[in-house]
Length: 143
Image (cartoon, rainbow, N blue to C red):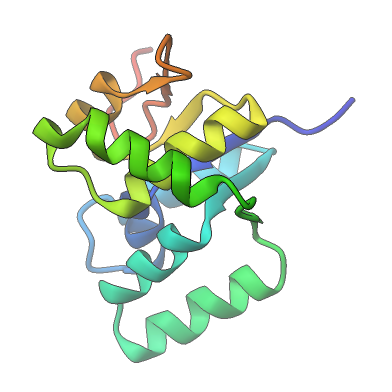
């Protein structure tokens, strides 16, 4: 049986890579019980680096290089679709990384996402129809 996969956004990776982040322990805790694969885009990798110290960035990129994250490859139509999404969602002021995750969701069929951008990913739609399934990794679990 294949491992479950979940999309991951910058906020999750930043929390995971930066011990000073208030969500750091929540990200680590999530990964200690999630036995699937994390999938993202190159844009999210780059955006995550922006928030890290040089040492954190080295550790983060080394983990990516070692296969801790599957990085979806853009196809020839990716930029055209991302441009269309930027136009459609212009009122939300989204960034390229978020829009690249919508495109990745459309091409992979993945809907589950680890993000701190709750309002953005609640508004976004996959193929203009399907909602993202926001994984509650940084909120207290109900017992």
